[in-house]
Each structure stands twice: as structure tokens, then as C-alpha cells.
Amino acid sequence: MYRLFLGKISTLSLTALPPELAKLAPEGKRRNAWLAGRALLCHAVSPLPTIHYGDQGKPGFDEDHALWFNLSHSGDNIALLLSDEGPVGCDIEAIRPRPHWQQLANATFTINEHAELEKEAEAHRLERFWCIWTRKEAMVKQRGGSAWQIVSFDSTTPLNLHLSDLQHEGLSLAACTPTPFHVTEQVIERVG
Image 1 (cartoon, rainbow, N blue to C red):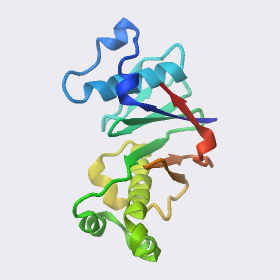
Image 2: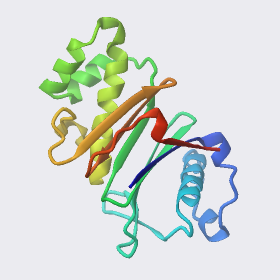
Image 3: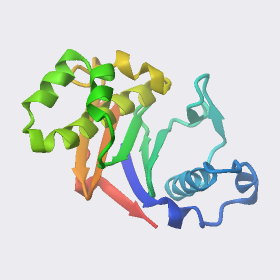
Image 4: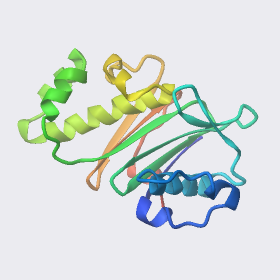
């Protein structure tokens, strides 16, 4: 079972959380995204198990709970992918102009990903860039890696993993899962 939730940080960060969870919220610019992510988790899983952090900082539940999740945010948008089938990764990005995106692609994309990008009409290459980027990020996050490892992942050959992506309403969304899952508008549960 996979469940994909999408919400707005500005709304979800105002959700009342259990006091013991709310007191763990960091201060500073990450606070609202953290609160929104925990609000999504509380919406999806009740009662919410204790969250632990892996070596690279990936949050997860303890071994007694056969559930895995991953959170991602971009701008005011936040996504939660929940699974009972194994570790998952998701990434969401607002499709937006990015200075020097072609240089970033040159530094991080594989030959196969460059070929995919080059097949796209010039007018749509920025959108394809975000599609490839979110797939790569989802792969890194599924494994609990760090962002600098993105160059070692090829989203065209996920090797024993399944990738799915969707571009909708100005967002690029990707999921990396251990078994087949297809991101479509119909599977997204909107919260808040």
C-alpha cells in the first residue's frame, strides 16, 4: 500500500500537534515545513509512532512499525509518501526558472538523462530538467542518502526500484518505491 499526500505548508503548519511532538519543532526557517510534515504524518498515521533519524538524517519509524515514509517540500507545497512495502523516497519541486539549470544538469545528470533531456523540444527542456531532478532526488531520499550523492544516481535505470513522476499544477513530483506505484492525480490525497 502506498499513500501520497499533498498539502500547503502555510496551512498545515498551523495544525495543532500533540504537545510532546510540537515541542520538538526546530526554531528558524525550517520550523513551518517541519510542523507541516508532522501534521501530514499525524493525519496519515494515528497514533503517530516515535520518529527516529538514520545516519544521514532520514526520519523513520522504529522497527516495530512496518511503515516507511518520506517528506519533501518546495515553496509552500509539501508532500508525504507513506508505504507498508519498504523504504520510499519522494521529491517535489515547483517548476520554475532556475539560473544556470543547464550547468547543473551538466554537473549532475548521467549520459542517459542527458539523452532524455535532449529529446525534449527546447521549449519544454526546463520542465524535463525538473522531472529528471525530482526522480534523482527521490532515489537519493529512498536510500537515505545526502544531496551530494545525486550525481551517482541514474533515474533512467533505477535498478530494483520503481520510479514514477507527475507534473501537475506547476509542480514536479516523483516517487521511488520498492514495488510498482504510479503517481497520478487520482492517487494524490490533498490535505489542508
